[in-house]
Image (cartoon, rainbow, N blue to C red; front, side, top):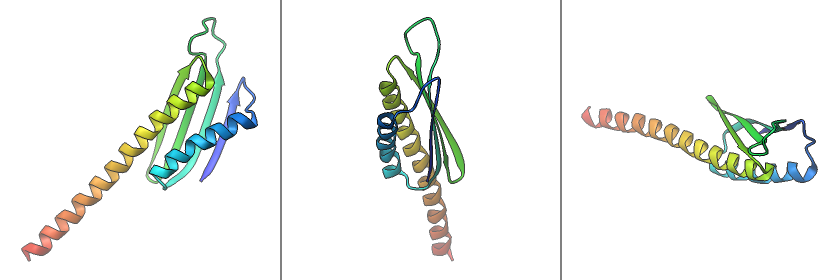
Length: 115
């Protein structure tokens, strides 16, 4: 798995990098066919203080790309929210793959029983 963590208007500190990496372990625990992960952490220059910190993640898995973004006033909270969304999306993607393959196996078994 290739992992790229970059910052926009922000320096990615080793503590921030290790935090994001530890949160990504949960994703890989659920789905091991992850090819590439790109995380972009951004501080937007808005006048309002709310939701200035943004975290975006693009995950390339076998067969498709998944994109998730999150905004919060705290960057660590934005990363937490991002990983929660990404975890739900990965589990849903995995369920779709498993359901599709189960249907093919069931059809094959029914065809073999009919012969």
